[in-house]
Length: 258
Ligand code: ADP
Ligand code: MG
Image 1 (cartoon, protein in one colour):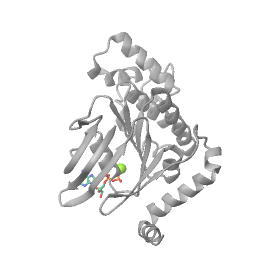
Image 2 (image 1 turned 120 degrees about the vertical axis):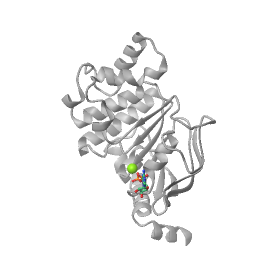
Image 3 (image 1 turned 90 degrees about the horizontal axis):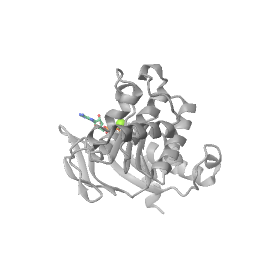
Image 4 (image 1 turned 30 degrees about the horizontal axis):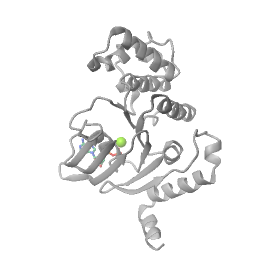
């Protein structure tokens, strides 16, 4: 569905991401994890059509991506800068539908549904400053849902909220993904979060940014914050990803001796 084929990115003379290929299949949830500065955001922004690659090509459903495509929504980390502070929730959400030529009634219905999906019904008339960080990030997710995206790309969306809110939002994303049948690319530096959410975990290393592993997550769904994390498979994957992220060299040597 969404593919990067040999995409690289150079900033000035610095190679941020070397030629990288990745495919996200329809309805799949792919976690992309790696240390700070390894090129996660760069990869995601290129896949979203927001940043041109230095080489290679991005395609969505077989079509080349050169600008943000219809049917693709992005959720960023910094909720405080991703909503318009001077607009109500209703208007922030309605704005996302502007390019989609919907009737007023359709927009209203989508706004209502998206707010219910993120657990914030009846917040239409609030302004962002009247909401907690977790609530604002829910609104940002609701805004992504307005376009009924086929693909949702998320860049460390929960890095700035407290641990309980984060767990709630993780489960919210899993629910919303089922309800809207959306394909998800989810960038995080949090190893547990990557394993907990994903069908696959793609691990990046830095200097230069590159993919060093692509692991299937064989854990039952629905996931559960307590039960899933007690599974031996969770512990095994978590430690494998941890080794790859924290000690990529040692992990590679261990793998090559098997
Ligand atoms: P991550 O999201 O994994 O932390 P980024 O994709 O943000 O990594 O950055 C990858 C590398 O590219 C880092 O070394 C970063 O400093 C550099 N970089 C990112 N954006 C720019 C930019 N606009 N100009 C120059 N260097 C950048
Ligand atoms: Mg980043």
